[in-house]
Length: 171
Ligand code: NI
View 1 (cartoon, rainbow, N blue to C red):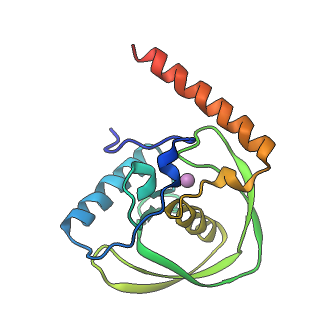
View 2 (cartoon, helix red, strand yellow):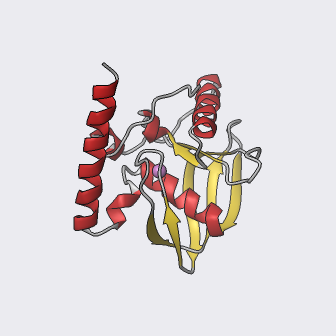
View 3 (spheres, protein in one colour):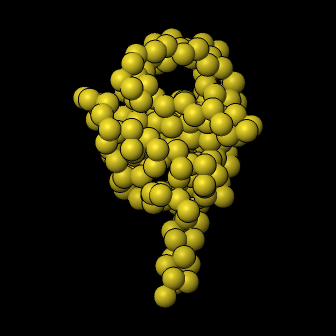
């Protein structure tokens, strides 16, 4: 049972810009726990606090096959990037939509962990994609915004229709 409700595109709250976390305390660690649970239950490989309507710079990621290698990023900052890769992306806020996005192939990210300890991480491939995708969420950006306006509008219409169906079925 997922602990938190995930906002669905085109919910305007997905476009809020997240604020830095001033203190990594027990409240943040509880949110990390709830977000991880929500991500694993979905199932997904990444979740940004923005997606659960918390507008603070917090991300959970797990790209491992076994789903047992949780990465927590507080106040992440990309300090270096190189290369280019195309990857088909999906998003828990845009269910059923998979589209190719071009992003940096390799990145170096600096962040705090769930204990407030600073660390640096070199990532490439899928992990680099995932970190960049989730960091976009913190800036209020959803991956469909990389697509053409035509494609994006089609997705928006599909999502609104899908949402109405869910609401109808819940009566
Ligand atoms: Ni996403």
